[in-house]
Image 1 (cartoon, rainbow, N blue to C red):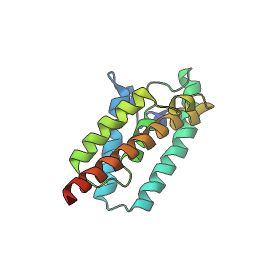
Image 2 (image 1 turned 135 degrees about the vertical axis):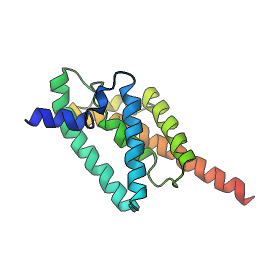
Image 3 (image 1 turned 90 degrees about the vertical axis):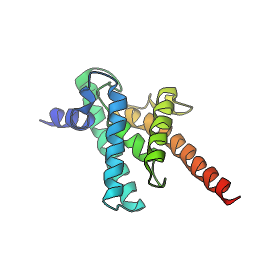
Length: 157
């Protein structure tokens, strides 16, 4: 029973079994979670708690799912992409344009895995699965904050 729950959580409700680009589909699911939080009026603390909670449950489920799938950071495991999108868009103003840009930025960084994100994959179990995407997403959030800041600065004069 525990392994089935872990796989369900790690694949984010089996979304990770998408036949094409499961990581991209998982990132789109993250966009939907982000939109749902913003639509519900979640404040930054609530968003941070959701991110922390999903990171923790992703670490647990990722550890068990890696055993189930027989390898590290299994392709169907997409809860890390969901969390990555939430981190990338954390404290970014709500807009479809910024969400789309954030999606592209995160996907690019998740593929490139800038230092030290690539090294975080080596961490044991689900922590490695979650940490590399979280680090890429922290870079993504920095990019988004710079974009918002530079857009605001250019409007000011």
